[in-house]
Amino acid sequence: MDEKIILIVGNSGSGKDTLLKALKNDFNNINFVRRYITRKPDKNENNYFLETSAFTILQTQGFFISSWYAHGNSYGISKASIKTGVNIISISRSKIEDFESNYKNVITINITVKKEVLRKRLENRARESKEEIENRLNRTYPKLNCKNLINFDNSLSLELSIEKFKELIKSLSEI
Image 1 (cartoon, one colour):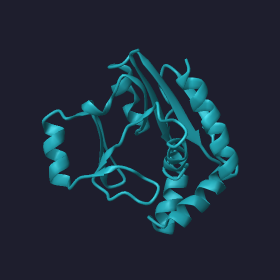
Image 2: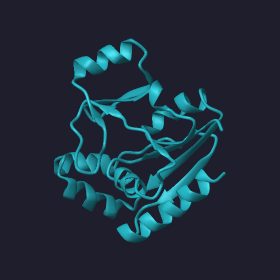
Image 3: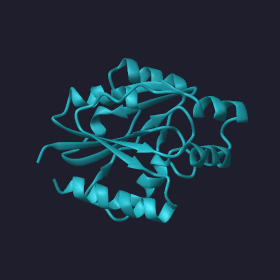
């Protein structure tokens, strides 16, 4: 079996990390790829923390298959973290092409959430000021340009969203 890449994208606060965390106990046959980030992870994340200088060194040495800068932090996915079989990776939507140009079997899941639900989540997370939250909520994004796109609405209750997301991942991991 070759690599199957399932990319998870969506607005900050849409629940990507919460959904991924909920999957881990039920899908031990999936490689949940950890990101390298220059911000210490919060309770919902399981990432590798790197100082900015260390990140830059790894980036210039070609350690990452994909890296990006967003919201004051650097993010990267190491080349060595991709395994044979199903890989799930949370990335920036601007980096989909990095994976589609390197792997044959790539599916992108865009996590969406209603604006008012997103506002409450961002406020509860308390990483940003009210002004930063409003700017984020009013930001527009270009249409996703990818080969295999699935939109997943994460506006339901946490329990129902997790159940539906598990069903989706199960169906995709069997293909």
